[in-house]
Amino acid sequence: MRLDKYLKVSRLIKRRTVANEACDAGRIMVNDKVAKASLNVKPGDVIEIQFGNKNTKVEVLSVEETYKKDEAKELYKYL
Image (tube, rainbow, N blue to C red; front, side, top):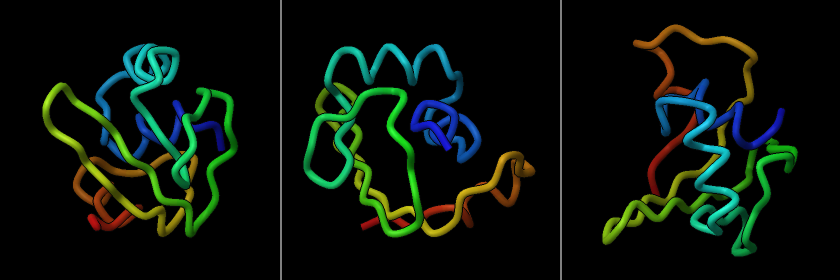
């Protein structure tokens, strides 16, 4: 699954366009490398997101096309 779509499905970022813009700005890293929105995400990848002063680091546990809002937190774990 594409990185921008995963960020939306997992609810780490609310909208796919915002996720796409964050990737273009170089604020999202996957496995310690700056990632493009088209990067394929797989279980075991570590995603680091920079929101202004705040950094969020998560590990991908599962990749699903659609997921309910309540259960979206099961797709990743915070590091």
